[in-house]
Length: 191
Image 1: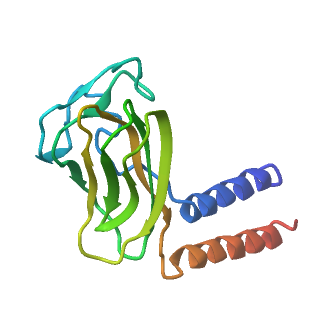
Image 2: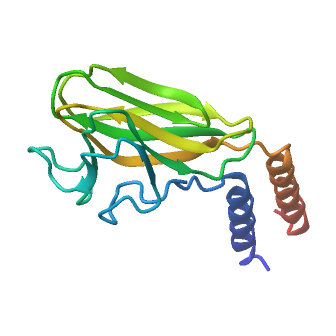
């Protein structure tokens, strides 16, 4: 039985930690446009001069082989409905490039909350932008709005991941039970 002690303790610890630390999966479908098109996304507004492609005017995708290209004259948008949980905080992260300084605009929002907005942005390579959002109910739409005549915005590597998950004490209770189990096991084995 003494040889089983370390194994039982390790298995109990792993079980406790796996319940206490949920995975943070990206909720966005086709986040890097690697399907070569807008699969999973809804386009609207002015969709002229928008598409998915590889390197554009010497700006390669941030990662992978593809990026979204948006150079419409009037405001257009890309959106996606996500499965969000009330009371959970999410981190929205994306990479944005602009190949021309001029009259333009770009905004990113989740659930109706605009976390990023830029007007008359200067030409730039890829820059990471991040904002946090706590979902309280209502719309679950991830929305990017943009216009950039006569040039394009380039968008890549979008992620929406939970950063906090409300559990009403369930995780803490399970972790507490696991720790009590470890103490009881230790006593039973005479450690």
